[in-house]
Length: 185
Ligand SMILES: Cc1cc2nc3c(=O)[nH]c(=O)nc-3n(C[C@H](O)[C@H](O)[C@H](O)COP(=O)(O)O)c2cc1C
Image 1 (cartoon, protein in one colour):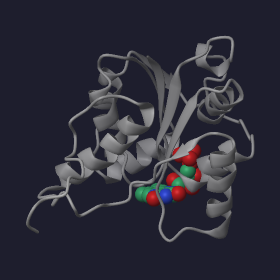
Image 2 (cartoon, helix red, strand yellow):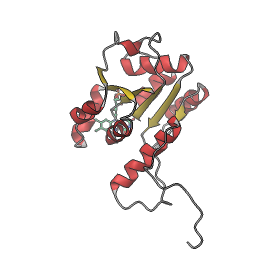
Image 3 (cartoon, rainbow, N blue to C red):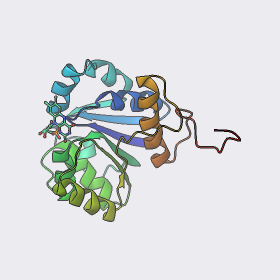
Image 4 (tube, rainbow, N blue to C red):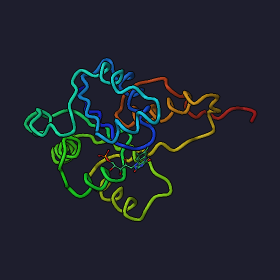
């Protein structure tokens, strides 16, 4: 599969690296926003290491890139993590950078868009934007925790969130333990 991975300026930039690591068998196109680079510094995440995992790397301002045109279709795009600003831009067709323009292409050509919005609490604007995107066909996959699989480390939590994204893309993985009813609690 050809998959665009877009990283925006919210907490949880580490999720994008883990996703790219899980997509090694696929052709990946990475776009990192300027604010995501700033957040990565605060969260001790290496954008350079992330870029080494991708097949193609773009700057957010590269509106003349191949993926800026729907004449070069990809199979899917994941915005991970997705800021409330980028969520709003995609939901409202405000395609001022390569991330929002690529997302517009993916939606208008009926390809799969997976959005991982990170904020809490959510504003009414964000809730409305998520609704708009869901109606447009995107899958909204917030990094919401579950406790049933008894995570021991932060890594388990990261894997759970990324596993949910891979589920949304329809890709096999063993990043988290699926729910099964046990005999005894
Ligand atoms: C350290 C840091 C953490 C942030 N965390 C969030 C967040 O969790 N969710 C969010 O929507 N915005 C967050 N922001 C604000 C966004 O970065 C800001 O709205 C920015 O304009 C998003 O731009 P982008 O979507 O182009 O990356 C954070 C900003 C900083 C500096």
